[in-house]
Image (cartoon, rainbow, N blue to C red; front, side, top):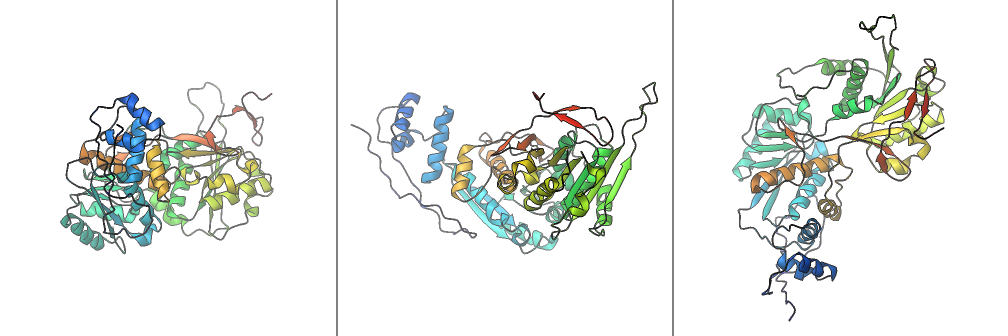
Amino acid sequence: MKKILFLLLPTFIFAQSFILSNIPLPKTYIQNLDPYDCDEACMQEYLDNGMVFSFLAHAYNKLDDTKQNEARAMFVSIFNLGSLHSGAELKIALLLPYKKIGKYAASTTNATFAYLMTKSHPFMIQSYKIENEEIETLQTTLEKIRKDGFNYVIAPLTQKGAKNIVLLNPALNIYFPTINKKDVPTNSAFLTFGAIDYDAQSNLLLKEALSPLIIFSDRSQTGKKLALYQEEEFLHPKPPKEDVYVEENATSSFFDTAISVFSQMEESKVVEEVETLETNETNQTDFVEEEKIVIKHFLSRRTSNLEPYLKDKEEIKNGSFFINTPIVKSGMILSQLTLYDVNATNVLSTQINYDPLLLSMTQYIDRKDMVVANSIIQHNNILIETNSLLGNDIVYDWINYTTTVGVDYFYSLITDEDRIYTNKISKNQMIYDIELLQPSRSKFIPYVRPIRLPREDANASLLLEEGEE
Protein backbone atom coordinates (compact mmCIF):
# COMPACT_ATOMS: atom_id res chain seq x y z
CA MET A 1 0.00 0.00 0.00
CA LYS A 2 1.35 3.37 -0.96
CA LYS A 3 1.95 6.04 1.66
CA ILE A 4 -0.88 8.18 2.95
CA LEU A 5 0.17 11.66 3.88
CA PHE A 6 -1.81 14.20 5.85
CA LEU A 7 -1.55 17.95 5.44
CA LEU A 8 -2.63 19.27 8.79
CA LEU A 9 -2.68 22.89 7.77
CA PRO A 10 -2.92 24.52 4.32
CA THR A 11 0.05 26.08 2.61
CA PHE A 12 0.24 29.82 2.18
CA ILE A 13 0.61 32.31 -0.65
CA PHE A 14 3.52 34.74 -0.56
CA ALA A 15 2.64 38.40 -0.20
CA GLN A 16 4.85 41.44 0.04
CA SER A 17 4.29 44.25 2.49
CA PHE A 18 6.47 46.91 4.03
CA ILE A 19 5.15 46.09 7.48
CA LEU A 20 5.35 42.48 8.60
CA SER A 21 2.21 41.24 10.29
CA ASN A 22 2.55 39.95 13.83
CA ILE A 23 0.13 37.13 12.96
CA PRO A 24 2.23 33.99 12.43
CA LEU A 25 2.01 32.35 9.03
CA PRO A 26 0.25 28.97 8.90
CA LYS A 27 2.58 25.98 8.91
CA THR A 28 2.43 22.83 6.82
CA TYR A 29 3.13 19.50 8.50
CA ILE A 30 3.73 16.19 6.75
CA GLN A 31 3.31 12.96 8.67
CA ASN A 32 5.36 9.95 7.59
CA LEU A 33 3.26 6.75 7.70
CA ASP A 34 5.76 4.64 5.77
CA PRO A 35 7.04 1.77 7.95
CA TYR A 36 10.08 1.29 5.67
CA ASP A 37 13.28 3.28 5.32
CA CYS A 38 13.92 5.20 2.11
CA ASP A 39 17.48 5.46 0.74
CA GLU A 40 18.82 7.92 -1.85
CA ALA A 41 17.55 5.86 -4.78
CA CYS A 42 14.10 5.67 -3.22
CA MET A 43 14.08 9.43 -2.59
CA GLN A 44 15.17 10.12 -6.15
CA GLU A 45 12.36 7.92 -7.45
CA TYR A 46 9.83 9.99 -5.51
CA LEU A 47 11.25 13.19 -7.02
CA ASP A 48 11.37 11.77 -10.54
CA ASN A 49 7.71 10.72 -10.29
CA GLY A 50 6.56 14.03 -8.85
CA MET A 51 5.70 12.49 -5.46
CA VAL A 52 6.81 15.57 -3.57
CA PHE A 53 5.13 14.87 -0.27
CA SER A 54 6.31 11.26 -0.15
CA PHE A 55 9.80 12.66 -0.67
CA LEU A 56 9.35 15.29 2.06
CA ALA A 57 7.96 12.73 4.50
CA HIS A 58 11.41 11.12 4.54
CA ALA A 59 13.48 14.29 4.06
CA TYR A 60 13.11 15.57 7.61
CA ASN A 61 16.86 16.18 7.99
CA LYS A 62 19.61 17.53 5.75
CA LEU A 63 20.33 15.10 2.91
CA ASP A 64 23.77 13.94 1.77
CA ASP A 65 22.89 14.19 -1.90
CA THR A 66 23.41 17.83 -2.93
CA LYS A 67 20.63 17.99 -5.54
CA GLN A 68 18.14 16.20 -3.30
CA ASN A 69 18.96 18.49 -0.40
CA GLU A 70 18.52 21.51 -2.68
CA ALA A 71 15.08 20.22 -3.67
CA ARG A 72 14.26 19.64 0.00
CA ALA A 73 15.24 23.21 0.93
CA MET A 74 13.12 24.61 -1.90
CA PHE A 75 10.02 22.66 -0.86
CA VAL A 76 10.54 23.59 2.80
CA SER A 77 10.44 27.22 1.72
CA ILE A 78 7.50 26.93 -0.71
CA PHE A 79 5.27 24.91 1.60
CA ASN A 80 6.40 26.62 4.81
CA LEU A 81 6.97 23.29 6.52
CA GLY A 82 6.71 23.18 10.28
CA SER A 83 9.89 23.14 12.31
CA LEU A 84 11.84 19.94 12.53
CA HIS A 85 14.13 21.40 15.19
CA SER A 86 13.39 21.28 18.87
CA GLY A 87 15.70 24.15 19.79
CA ALA A 88 14.75 27.61 20.97
CA GLU A 89 13.28 30.16 18.60
CA LEU A 90 15.82 32.01 16.47
CA LYS A 91 15.42 35.76 16.92
CA ILE A 92 16.86 38.45 14.64
CA ALA A 93 16.11 42.17 14.81
CA LEU A 94 16.37 44.66 11.95
CA LEU A 95 17.43 48.23 12.66
CA LEU A 96 16.00 50.30 9.81
CA PRO A 97 16.60 54.04 9.25
CA TYR A 98 13.87 53.95 6.59
CA LYS A 99 14.20 57.63 5.61
CA LYS A 100 17.89 57.14 4.86
CA ILE A 101 17.89 53.79 3.08
CA GLY A 102 14.55 54.04 1.22
CA LYS A 103 13.58 50.83 -0.58
CA TYR A 104 16.21 48.85 1.31
CA ALA A 105 14.11 49.08 4.45
CA ALA A 106 11.79 46.60 2.73
CA SER A 107 14.26 44.62 0.62
CA THR A 108 16.70 43.83 3.44
CA THR A 109 13.74 42.69 5.52
CA ASN A 110 12.65 40.45 2.66
CA ALA A 111 16.19 39.09 2.24
CA THR A 112 16.32 38.17 5.93
CA PHE A 113 12.85 36.61 5.81
CA ALA A 114 13.60 34.68 2.60
CA TYR A 115 16.73 33.15 4.08
CA LEU A 116 15.04 31.99 7.26
CA MET A 117 12.11 30.63 5.25
CA THR A 118 14.46 28.06 3.72
CA LYS A 119 15.37 26.75 7.17
CA SER A 120 13.16 24.40 9.14
CA HIS A 121 13.87 26.23 12.36
CA PRO A 122 11.39 28.42 14.29
CA PHE A 123 12.30 32.07 13.96
CA MET A 124 11.16 35.56 14.80
CA ILE A 125 12.04 38.71 12.86
CA GLN A 126 11.20 42.11 14.27
CA SER A 127 11.79 45.45 12.57
CA TYR A 128 12.77 48.54 14.54
CA LYS A 129 12.24 51.63 12.40
CA ILE A 130 14.11 54.77 13.37
CA GLU A 131 13.57 58.33 12.15
CA ASN A 132 17.27 59.21 12.12
CA GLU A 133 20.71 57.89 13.01
CA GLU A 134 21.50 60.28 15.84
CA ILE A 135 23.31 58.72 18.77
CA GLU A 136 20.39 59.28 21.17
CA THR A 137 17.93 57.58 18.81
CA LEU A 138 20.23 54.62 18.30
CA GLN A 139 20.89 54.22 22.02
CA THR A 140 17.19 54.19 22.86
CA THR A 141 16.39 51.70 20.10
CA LEU A 142 19.26 49.35 20.93
CA GLU A 143 18.17 49.28 24.56
CA LYS A 144 14.67 48.32 23.45
CA ILE A 145 16.06 45.61 21.16
CA ARG A 146 18.01 44.13 24.06
CA LYS A 147 15.01 44.39 26.38
CA ASP A 148 12.88 42.52 23.82
CA GLY A 149 15.30 39.60 23.93
CA PHE A 150 17.16 40.07 20.65
CA ASN A 151 20.92 39.53 20.60
CA TYR A 152 21.46 39.57 16.83
CA VAL A 153 20.79 42.68 14.73
CA ILE A 154 20.95 43.33 10.99
CA ALA A 155 21.59 47.07 10.59
CA PRO A 156 21.63 48.53 7.04
CA LEU A 157 22.82 51.93 8.24
CA THR A 158 24.76 54.75 6.62
CA GLN A 159 28.32 55.51 7.64
CA LYS A 160 27.08 58.09 10.14
CA GLY A 161 24.85 55.56 11.91
CA ALA A 162 27.58 52.92 12.03
CA LYS A 163 30.04 55.42 13.54
CA ASN A 164 27.53 56.34 16.23
CA ILE A 165 26.99 52.68 17.10
CA VAL A 166 30.76 52.27 17.40
CA LEU A 167 30.72 55.13 19.92
CA LEU A 168 27.91 53.44 21.86
CA ASN A 169 29.81 50.11 21.82
CA PRO A 170 26.74 47.96 22.59
CA ALA A 171 27.08 44.34 23.74
CA LEU A 172 24.91 43.15 20.83
CA ASN A 173 25.91 41.20 17.75
CA ILE A 174 25.34 43.75 14.97
CA TYR A 175 25.97 43.17 11.26
CA PHE A 176 26.24 46.12 8.85
CA PRO A 177 25.51 44.94 5.27
CA THR A 178 26.03 48.49 3.93
CA ILE A 179 29.35 49.41 5.59
CA ASN A 180 32.93 48.30 5.05
CA LYS A 181 35.16 48.30 8.11
CA LYS A 182 37.72 50.49 6.32
CA ASP A 183 35.27 53.36 6.68
CA VAL A 184 34.45 52.78 10.36
CA PRO A 185 37.52 51.62 12.34
CA THR A 186 36.66 49.73 15.52
CA ASN A 187 38.03 46.94 17.71
CA SER A 188 34.63 45.73 18.91
CA ALA A 189 34.17 41.98 18.72
CA PHE A 190 30.39 42.42 18.52
CA LEU A 191 30.29 44.44 15.28
CA THR A 192 30.64 42.75 11.88
CA PHE A 193 30.85 44.59 8.56
CA GLY A 194 29.52 43.16 5.31
CA ALA A 195 29.83 45.74 2.52
CA ILE A 196 31.96 45.01 -0.53
CA ASP A 197 35.35 46.67 -0.92
CA TYR A 198 35.20 49.36 -3.63
CA ASP A 199 38.87 50.16 -3.11
CA ALA A 200 39.93 46.56 -3.78
CA GLN A 201 37.73 46.51 -6.88
CA SER A 202 39.28 49.79 -8.06
CA ASN A 203 42.79 48.39 -7.56
CA LEU A 204 42.01 45.40 -9.76
CA LEU A 205 40.39 47.54 -12.44
CA LEU A 206 43.26 50.03 -12.53
CA LYS A 207 45.56 47.25 -13.67
CA GLU A 208 43.62 47.49 -16.95
CA ALA A 209 43.91 51.28 -17.20
CA LEU A 210 46.14 53.23 -19.59
CA SER A 211 47.01 56.92 -19.36
CA PRO A 212 45.29 59.28 -19.63
CA LEU A 213 42.79 58.11 -16.99
CA ILE A 214 39.54 60.09 -17.25
CA ILE A 215 37.31 59.72 -14.20
CA PHE A 216 33.60 60.57 -14.24
CA SER A 217 31.92 60.61 -10.82
CA ASP A 218 28.72 61.95 -9.40
CA ARG A 219 28.86 64.45 -6.54
CA SER A 220 27.91 62.04 -3.80
CA GLN A 221 30.41 61.41 -1.03
CA THR A 222 30.99 57.89 -2.37
CA GLY A 223 31.61 59.21 -5.89
CA LYS A 224 34.08 61.84 -4.73
CA LYS A 225 35.92 59.45 -2.45
CA LEU A 226 36.23 56.82 -5.18
CA ALA A 227 37.54 59.36 -7.69
CA LEU A 228 40.20 60.57 -5.30
CA TYR A 229 41.23 57.06 -4.37
CA GLN A 230 41.44 55.96 -8.00
CA GLU A 231 43.51 59.01 -8.93
CA GLU A 232 45.96 58.44 -6.10
CA GLU A 233 46.26 54.71 -6.78
CA PHE A 234 46.78 55.25 -10.51
CA LEU A 235 49.53 57.84 -10.01
CA HIS A 236 51.15 56.18 -6.98
CA PRO A 237 50.27 52.45 -7.04
CA LYS A 238 50.95 50.85 -3.68
CA PRO A 239 51.98 47.23 -3.18
CA PRO A 240 49.19 45.03 -1.76
CA LYS A 241 49.09 44.65 2.00
CA GLU A 242 48.17 41.55 3.93
CA ASP A 243 46.38 43.57 6.58
CA VAL A 244 43.97 45.76 4.66
CA TYR A 245 41.91 46.92 7.62
CA VAL A 246 44.11 49.23 9.66
CA GLU A 247 42.86 49.87 13.16
CA GLU A 248 43.41 53.51 14.08
CA ASN A 249 41.65 56.33 15.88
CA ALA A 250 42.30 59.00 13.30
CA THR A 251 39.07 60.67 12.26
CA SER A 252 40.46 62.50 9.26
CA SER A 253 42.60 61.51 6.32
CA PHE A 254 43.89 62.82 3.04
CA PHE A 255 40.71 61.69 1.31
CA ASP A 256 38.33 63.18 3.88
CA THR A 257 40.15 66.53 3.68
CA ALA A 258 40.21 66.49 -0.10
CA ILE A 259 36.50 65.69 -0.31
CA SER A 260 35.62 68.86 1.58
CA VAL A 261 37.65 70.85 -0.94
CA PHE A 262 36.13 69.21 -4.01
CA SER A 263 32.60 69.67 -2.67
CA GLN A 264 33.01 73.37 -3.43
CA MET A 265 33.88 72.79 -7.08
CA GLU A 266 31.71 74.06 -9.90
CA GLU A 267 30.71 71.53 -12.53
CA SER A 268 32.53 73.40 -15.29
CA LYS A 269 35.89 73.02 -13.55
CA VAL A 270 38.06 70.09 -14.44
CA VAL A 271 40.85 68.96 -12.18
CA GLU A 272 43.88 67.63 -13.99
CA GLU A 273 46.92 66.11 -12.41
CA VAL A 274 50.04 65.22 -14.31
CA GLU A 275 52.84 63.36 -12.69
CA THR A 276 56.11 62.24 -14.24
CA LEU A 277 57.39 59.02 -12.73
CA GLU A 278 60.95 59.17 -11.46
CA THR A 279 63.71 57.60 -13.51
CA ASN A 280 64.30 53.98 -12.60
CA GLU A 281 67.52 54.20 -10.61
CA THR A 282 68.37 50.58 -11.27
CA ASN A 283 68.44 51.22 -15.02
CA GLN A 284 71.84 52.33 -16.35
CA THR A 285 70.26 54.36 -19.17
CA ASP A 286 68.54 57.74 -19.03
CA PHE A 287 65.15 56.18 -19.90
CA VAL A 288 62.17 57.89 -18.24
CA GLU A 289 58.80 56.18 -18.04
CA GLU A 290 55.82 57.73 -19.76
CA GLU A 291 54.01 60.31 -17.69
CA LYS A 292 50.62 59.46 -16.26
CA ILE A 293 47.71 61.85 -16.56
CA VAL A 294 44.47 61.90 -14.58
CA ILE A 295 41.49 64.06 -15.53
CA LYS A 296 38.50 64.16 -13.20
CA HIS A 297 34.93 65.36 -13.82
CA PHE A 298 32.28 65.58 -11.10
CA LEU A 299 28.82 65.58 -12.69
CA SER A 300 25.64 66.90 -11.17
CA ARG A 301 22.32 65.08 -11.50
CA ARG A 302 21.19 67.62 -14.11
CA THR A 303 24.14 67.03 -16.44
CA SER A 304 23.07 65.33 -19.65
CA ASN A 305 25.39 66.84 -22.27
CA LEU A 306 29.04 65.80 -22.12
CA GLU A 307 30.11 67.62 -25.28
CA PRO A 308 32.38 70.09 -23.39
CA TYR A 309 34.29 67.14 -21.90
CA LEU A 310 34.45 64.81 -24.90
CA LYS A 311 34.15 66.50 -28.30
CA ASP A 312 37.44 67.08 -30.13
CA LYS A 313 39.50 66.59 -26.96
CA GLU A 314 42.82 65.22 -28.16
CA GLU A 315 44.10 64.90 -24.62
CA ILE A 316 41.63 62.08 -23.84
CA LYS A 317 42.03 60.04 -27.05
CA ASN A 318 42.80 56.37 -26.40
CA GLY A 319 42.52 56.91 -22.68
CA SER A 320 40.86 54.72 -20.07
CA PHE A 321 37.61 55.96 -18.55
CA PHE A 322 36.59 55.17 -14.98
CA ILE A 323 32.92 55.83 -14.25
CA ASN A 324 31.58 56.08 -10.68
CA THR A 325 28.01 56.98 -11.52
CA PRO A 326 24.58 55.32 -11.14
CA ILE A 327 23.39 53.09 -13.96
CA VAL A 328 21.31 55.67 -15.87
CA LYS A 329 24.10 58.26 -15.85
CA SER A 330 26.58 55.57 -16.82
CA GLY A 331 24.46 54.63 -19.83
CA MET A 332 24.47 58.28 -20.90
CA ILE A 333 28.25 58.48 -20.59
CA LEU A 334 28.77 55.31 -22.64
CA SER A 335 26.51 56.48 -25.45
CA GLN A 336 28.24 59.87 -25.68
CA LEU A 337 31.69 58.31 -25.77
CA THR A 338 30.53 56.69 -29.00
CA LEU A 339 28.70 59.80 -30.20
CA TYR A 340 31.80 61.99 -29.95
CA ASP A 341 34.11 59.30 -31.33
CA VAL A 342 36.38 59.35 -28.29
CA ASN A 343 37.99 56.00 -29.17
CA ALA A 344 38.49 54.99 -25.53
CA THR A 345 40.86 52.15 -24.73
CA ASN A 346 38.35 50.82 -22.19
CA VAL A 347 35.71 51.89 -19.70
CA LEU A 348 36.06 50.69 -16.10
CA SER A 349 33.48 50.50 -13.33
CA THR A 350 33.05 48.97 -9.88
CA GLN A 351 30.03 47.07 -8.54
CA ILE A 352 27.93 50.22 -9.07
CA ASN A 353 27.26 49.23 -12.68
CA TYR A 354 26.91 45.48 -12.33
CA ASP A 355 23.28 45.71 -13.33
CA PRO A 356 21.26 43.95 -16.08
CA LEU A 357 19.80 47.36 -16.97
CA LEU A 358 23.16 48.15 -18.52
CA LEU A 359 22.48 45.49 -21.16
CA SER A 360 19.06 46.83 -22.10
CA MET A 361 19.66 50.59 -21.98
CA THR A 362 22.92 50.71 -23.96
CA GLN A 363 23.96 49.53 -27.40
CA TYR A 364 26.58 46.81 -27.65
CA ILE A 365 28.95 49.16 -29.50
CA ASP A 366 28.79 51.53 -26.51
CA ARG A 367 29.71 48.91 -23.91
CA LYS A 368 31.90 46.45 -25.83
CA ASP A 369 35.11 47.80 -24.22
CA MET A 370 33.67 48.05 -20.72
CA VAL A 371 35.06 46.11 -17.74
CA VAL A 372 32.99 45.76 -14.55
CA ALA A 373 34.17 44.44 -11.16
CA ASN A 374 31.78 42.12 -9.33
CA SER A 375 31.84 40.55 -5.87
CA ILE A 376 28.47 38.77 -6.00
CA ILE A 377 30.05 35.46 -6.85
CA GLN A 378 28.63 32.79 -4.56
CA HIS A 379 25.10 31.82 -5.58
CA ASN A 380 22.50 29.56 -4.00
CA ASN A 381 19.57 28.64 -6.23
CA ILE A 382 17.19 28.07 -3.32
CA LEU A 383 17.81 31.52 -1.87
CA ILE A 384 17.66 33.16 -5.29
CA GLU A 385 14.26 31.61 -6.04
CA THR A 386 12.85 32.27 -2.58
CA ASN A 387 13.88 35.92 -2.79
CA SER A 388 12.37 36.10 -6.27
CA LEU A 389 9.02 34.95 -4.88
CA LEU A 390 9.17 37.99 -2.61
CA GLY A 391 10.16 40.31 -5.45
CA ASN A 392 13.71 40.53 -4.14
CA ASP A 393 17.00 40.39 -6.03
CA ILE A 394 20.18 38.90 -4.55
CA VAL A 395 21.88 38.20 -7.90
CA TYR A 396 22.67 41.81 -8.88
CA ASP A 397 21.70 43.89 -5.83
CA TRP A 398 24.76 43.83 -3.61
CA ILE A 399 23.07 45.18 -0.46
CA ASN A 400 20.43 42.42 -0.56
CA TYR A 401 23.25 39.96 -1.24
CA THR A 402 25.43 41.12 1.67
CA THR A 403 22.35 41.10 3.93
CA THR A 404 21.76 37.46 3.02
CA VAL A 405 25.41 36.65 3.72
CA GLY A 406 25.06 38.30 7.13
CA VAL A 407 21.89 36.41 8.06
CA ASP A 408 23.63 33.19 7.02
CA TYR A 409 26.54 34.09 9.31
CA PHE A 410 24.24 34.79 12.25
CA TYR A 411 22.26 31.60 11.60
CA SER A 412 25.49 29.60 11.76
CA LEU A 413 26.50 31.27 15.03
CA ILE A 414 23.13 30.59 16.63
CA THR A 415 22.50 27.03 15.42
CA ASP A 416 26.09 25.82 14.96
CA GLU A 417 25.18 24.68 11.43
CA ASP A 418 27.49 25.12 8.45
CA ARG A 419 27.34 28.40 6.56
CA ILE A 420 25.97 28.46 3.02
CA TYR A 421 28.28 31.32 2.05
CA THR A 422 31.92 30.50 2.69
CA ASN A 423 33.34 34.03 2.63
CA LYS A 424 36.26 34.48 4.97
CA ILE A 425 35.97 37.00 7.78
CA SER A 426 39.04 39.12 8.58
CA LYS A 427 38.93 41.21 11.74
CA ASN A 428 35.12 41.28 11.62
CA GLN A 429 34.97 42.26 7.94
CA MET A 430 33.33 39.92 5.43
CA ILE A 431 35.78 39.30 2.57
CA TYR A 432 34.49 38.89 -0.99
CA ASP A 433 36.35 37.61 -4.02
CA ILE A 434 36.39 39.88 -7.07
CA GLU A 435 35.92 38.94 -10.71
CA LEU A 436 36.20 41.15 -13.79
CA LEU A 437 33.34 40.90 -16.28
CA GLN A 438 32.36 42.38 -19.62
CA PRO A 439 28.78 43.27 -20.59
CA SER A 440 28.36 41.28 -23.81
CA ARG A 441 25.36 41.30 -26.13
CA SER A 442 23.03 39.53 -23.71
CA LYS A 443 24.84 38.93 -20.41
CA PHE A 444 27.95 39.59 -18.36
CA ILE A 445 30.83 37.33 -19.38
CA PRO A 446 34.35 36.82 -17.94
CA TYR A 447 36.79 39.52 -19.00
CA VAL A 448 39.68 38.48 -21.21
CA ARG A 449 42.53 40.97 -21.30
CA PRO A 450 43.32 42.04 -24.87
CA ILE A 451 46.83 41.88 -26.27
CA ARG A 452 48.25 45.41 -26.23
CA LEU A 453 51.16 46.41 -28.43
CA PRO A 454 53.36 49.31 -27.24
CA ARG A 455 52.15 52.73 -28.29
CA GLU A 456 54.01 54.34 -31.14
CA ASP A 457 53.49 57.76 -29.66
CA ALA A 458 51.73 59.38 -26.73
CA ASN A 459 48.43 59.69 -28.56
CA ALA A 460 48.18 56.27 -30.19
CA SER A 461 47.69 52.72 -28.99
CA LEU A 462 46.99 49.52 -30.79
CA LEU A 463 44.83 46.81 -29.27
CA LEU A 464 44.56 43.36 -30.75
CA GLU A 465 42.10 40.80 -29.42
CA GLU A 466 43.48 37.30 -29.03
CA GLY A 467 43.35 35.50 -32.37
CA GLU A 468 42.91 38.73 -34.38
CA GLU A 469 45.21 39.18 -37.35
